[in-house]
Length: 172
Image (cartoon, rainbow, N blue to C red; front, side, top):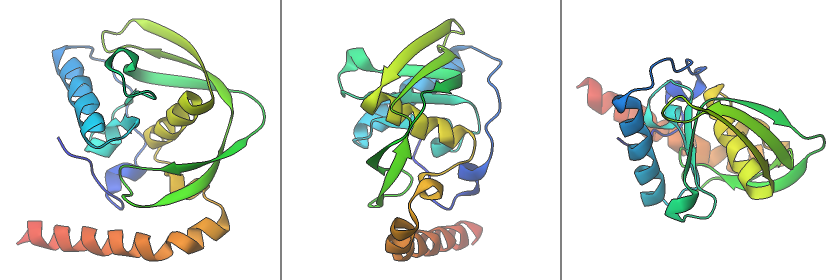
């Protein structure tokens, strides 16, 4: 399992609802947690590892006890937005100011299919909103300010060129 980078088309697809809660799903979630930790991330959505399913993992503190898995999540966001700096494992080295709701309620299932309801605020809420966007094919660059989009244009073009190069190498 590896993290796919922009502009891989899977990052723009709306992820499918998970209907099978089996050992394969649990293994995928475990591998995603390990990959996220290895990459020094705090959240990772299944499309970021090439899987177009509604699965995300996150861990705001980095402590094993705080690792969480959400399957088929639905969010209820608070009113108002707070700007904060975000990056993304699928966009290495790119950061931008993104406005997000300061709190939310998420209703989802865990990796076994059991219902989960969690209230989150601040950093955890930001992480889950970022990862939830991935499940809808929305990328954090879509939410950047116009000034940040201009600032990161060169880095995005470099990622696109690297993607094209990898695609040509695979085709050979």
